[in-house]
Image (tube, rainbow, N blue to C red; front, side):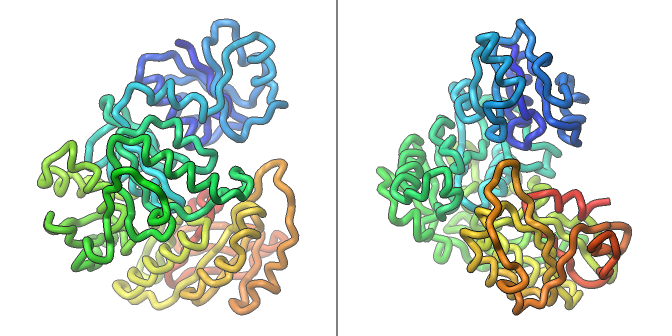
Length: 434
């Protein structure tokens, strides 16, 4: 089958394209512009056209798969339909890609990328993740028909992921605009996803999961099942050590209670496939994921950390990890650079955002990273975040040993000491790297 992907440079769609290629299909795609991901795809033998144009849709295509960001006005989507080529959204294509695989599917508002990457390292399996695992340097790995898959609740596509085992870190309401703010519909989707699996592993202390009607729940109770939690640095890298139930001691890359929780869910899910000693050993292969407590620069005076956290709950967890790092390094200053992600998310979670930065010594706020066509909402950041006395900057310029904050094309401040944490799901990750 010859498959064309519209929006192939996205972190999710690129993984699906890679998977189909390794599954024996002929794959090509397009995106609005060339990016590091599209360049990697080209190096892997996938033809990528930039920018998007109707001429990229040839008569020999069997299927066109398009990302959620693609609208009905997209010239390639229009041309595909005019040529009567079968077109499917990413969500609709999942049964074709995952239908005959043994899928360990991880869902949740927070922690699903980390849990999926940990599980892929433990199982040494195929993987489809919405982030880059440092274990194998990609959002994708093809090994066999055993798949660790990051399942997405944001558009209910997890209902099409054919889970053998459904793993849920938490079910906090998020992306409610898709569900038209119908909470019953949102929680019913989670119930259906979990009950689709022959097995499940669930965070039994999540207040939302506890309310779900699950047929045969397999709960992890973190407060009693995870014991003797401690944190350590190895060559400047963060690690968490913990005991799990009666299974002994485990060590995993990263800092924090949430890391131990994510690893525990992955360990319990892997028990069906592997002996516990192999699980313990393979867990050490996990090296973190890009943009999750990602240490991009460090010296004796400072460390720069990039983190994808873009929801108050995620930022709160990352701030706790920064606190642990601070206690072990004595850098003694915590600076957060926040790039708000989407007007709707910022507005809906404003009270949470106003509280989640309380562990920092200085807050820097960048302009909202928005998406085309999003409704612009009036948010008075100066008023809402006045207690932090924040610095407002337009962008960053990062070099060895420092970050310059730029406003109106002028340098307004230089950061070169302490723990500097950048959070957000927009282009801040590129601004933090040089």
